[in-house]
Amino acid sequence: MKAHDGMYIGGAWRPATGADTIAVVNPVDEQVIAHVPAGTAEDVDAAVAAARAALPGWAATPPAERGAVIGALRDALAARKDEIAETVTAELGSPLPFSQMVHAAVPIAVAGGYAELAASYAFQEKIGNSTVLLEPVGVVGAITPWNYPLHQIVAKVAPALAAGCTVVLKPAEDTPLVAQLFAEAAHEAGVPAGVFNLVTGLGPVAGQALAEHEGVDLVSFTGSTAVGKQIGATAGAAVKPVALELGGKSANVILPSADLAKAVNVGVANVMSNSGQTCSAWTRMLVHADQYDEAVELAAAAAAKYGERIGPVVNAKQQARVRGYIEKGVAEGARVVVGGPETPHDQGYFIAPTVFADVRPEMTVAQEEIFGPVLSILKYADEDEALAIANGTVYGLAGAVWAGDEAEAVAFARRMDTGQVDINGGRFNPQAPFGGYKQSGVGRELGPHGLGEYLQTKSLQF
Ligand code: NAD
Image (cartoon, rainbow, N blue to C red; front, side, top):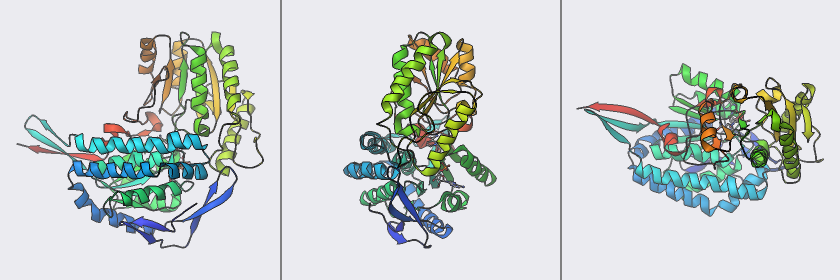
């Protein structure tokens, strides 16, 4: 697999300041496929300086022109869609069709959306005798995880560029190759030198240096709640805005009037997709006591079918972590109906698709984010109990409600403490605001709400 041995800073690939590298491993066969440089604080300094120098020119570029550059970036990504899909498959282990349909296609759509939005967004508004200007926040430090590696990059970089900000990106250490491909596409698209910069490296080194950098005006972070809390504290101490997209433990609430088979089957597919490494996955299925046994049977049959189709999780650490959670579920008295902690293959970081029944709300598998193909099915006696269980974690990122009548589902969704709810299997909308309540985060990504995160307001009185 092709890899750059430098950092993309100030419009060119520059040698890294240190000699350390990060090995990129294919999770399917555990083979090293490439090495990328492990960035240092000096690399981050150089990238922030380049972003700072480029800021006045880019911020003053008319929004429609910024939109045209983002449109060219979209086209450059589209021209590389096969290479993107193959790269994500190689470094994340995701099956190729899923890489094509999701990991490559969604970021192209999101970039296209921001190309249009940059041109049409109202960067100015009138309120009484005031004109309110929406101005770019400045230099953005973007830190991204590996689970949807290109999507998370584009969900930060495209709106930041649309807003007139410049960016330094520190992508996840497990998936740096698709980030390098993104930098190539940005270069080819004519993103001006310094407007987008890439520093690969380890979280506690390059990531932390970026999060703490005085020259960064806003940190936009997607990742674990533990690291997010640390980044939020650093930003708070420096009185800087921060956007945090963190973990989730979302509930899939199946009300008694729902089409049970459909709700269960879609719910299982939602959890197993991307090998369970989706922050918004509906990892807790809530079923009425009268339908519980039938739902468990349906879920077991649906999950068993995933056995051969599912990819591995991203690395050995994640595999050990997920197996540990499955063992803990068993130890706390949940019943494994499919799967279990044994690894299904001798090689690769695979986890058997696993379904737990008889899960109680206080169990670890019902409270903590597992980030693997593990579903917990819980029983409720009435709607109030379903709501208490649904809202009964520290998280609030996503969720689903199924009912025979849409209005009934919406009434329940209104009472959920969570950032997005899919009603009767509603489709993902890449323009809708995405983000969390409670410890799932601060701020929103995607669409006009995502663009707004990169703007600050100035009022002129007349
Ligand atoms: P992580 O927090 O370990 O890493 C995320 C990023 O932060 C990586 O680039 C990493 O290098 C960097 N990082 C690590 N330590 C750092 C530090 N001390 N300072 C600065 N940067 C640091 O998370 P992960 O394991 O890569 O990703 C999985 C987590 O991300 C899950 O909890 C998942 O729910 C969450 N996630 C949330 C969303 C969302 O939109 N809410 C989306 C995807 C993933």
